[in-house]
Length: 259
Image (tube, rainbow, N blue to C red; front, side, top):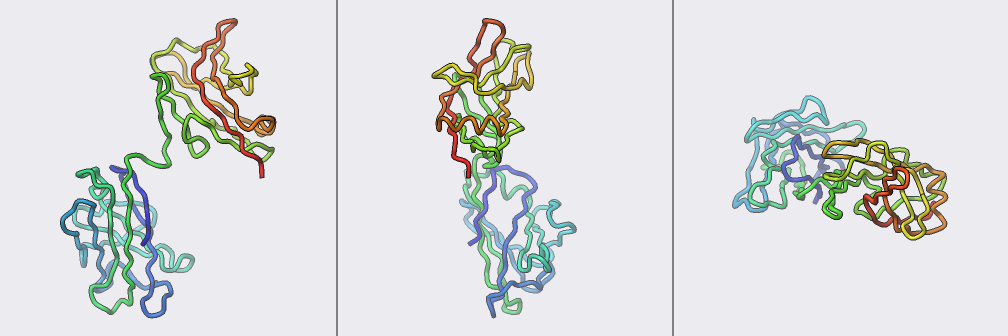
């Protein structure tokens, strides 16, 4: 069974599935939305019955990878790339199938032949409907302040980075978003070893003043190589101006060996 993941209420949803020829086990490449007896069934976790979509309710796709609303009761279907990706098909569904519903955690479906002329081995698939986008920024709260960590490099307040010349995080490894703190305009942002007080790297102010202020931490390959001395740093993110040092956040950074 094909396993996919989408955040609940995500819009413009399209899925890729692989269809197999039931006679020889190879890729099935000759289907389109108008193929006789082609059927797609969909149902969410708490649905009492499935929704069977067939015939004129299976629409074509003009451009693979570009979602166009099929409309209620319809679905879109087309081969992805017969020459380079034989057997792969794209399915586009209306937004309502991924909406929150009654706490549904899965959207299950299948592509199959209601007769026997397509030589189509039934292809079930399941989409986990998560509460959040697994690829989105993650926001947590530290001392009442929201902290947003970007991308796959950091999935909690504890960073995990690679050390060595090949790892150059010129973009922000992490971005902290603060509300309700004193203005950090004009201050120097330092990433500090919390135990020794050594400045490890300089942070950047993305925005300052007002109710919402942001700072980020870019790291060069030279800096990540230098971090090899320790595998774990207890860090402080500090905003300094003269002798006035304000600790904005604390956490851990784990340095993984370069390979």
